[in-house]
Amino acid sequence: MDIRRRYFWTGFAVVLVLVGAVLSARLIQGKNDLPDRGNQKVRGPLDAPFHIVDFSDFQCPACRVGAEALQTIENEFPDILRIEFRHYPLEQPHPWALTAALFSECAAEQGKFWEFHDRLFSEQETWTKSKEVPSLLARYAREAGLNMHQLQPCIQNPKTLAEIRRDQSAAEKIGIRSTPTFLINDRQFVGALQLKTQGRAFILEELQKTKSDSPAEG
Image (cartoon, rainbow, N blue to C red; front, top):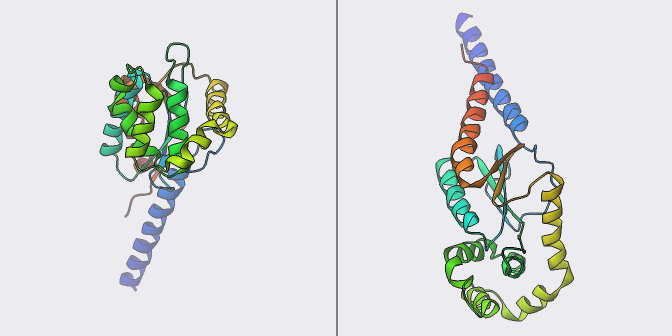
């Protein structure tokens, strides 16, 4: 009888731990009040407890550093982050930011967004100083394997620009004014340094809360 009772309470405790973990993950997750943009510029598990939204500008040097910092965070916390890119081209200081955003949006339409994203940042110092930016971006698109017959109509399609403007509008509604700005669930972090320090600390704190809120076996 004692053995049966012990197995019952052990099993019950395990169920409570699992339920507590799920509930805690749900409390952590989904606090970014942003319109859904689908999954073309998203990577990571659907049920990841942390959703990081990166508002960025491809011509912005700080955004290149921010992308590197984000990759470092992603490597440190595999399987618990869902990363989403949002456009926020600052056209006044960066005259080619919108053009790059249009190309990347069309790369997303063909399922090649992240490849193009990485190329734009890794080659940022090259294409931003070129006298033939559209031609160079087209070369990157071709080398990424995009269908070039579909690319030009997509870039010229008003719907493509509208998608970028929607991202900008969403950013402005929640008070974003500079790039890169990262949202980790309901928290805002500006720049690579804040992401690597305060953003990382926030993730660790939330994970610790989840562990603390889960019932202990006994």
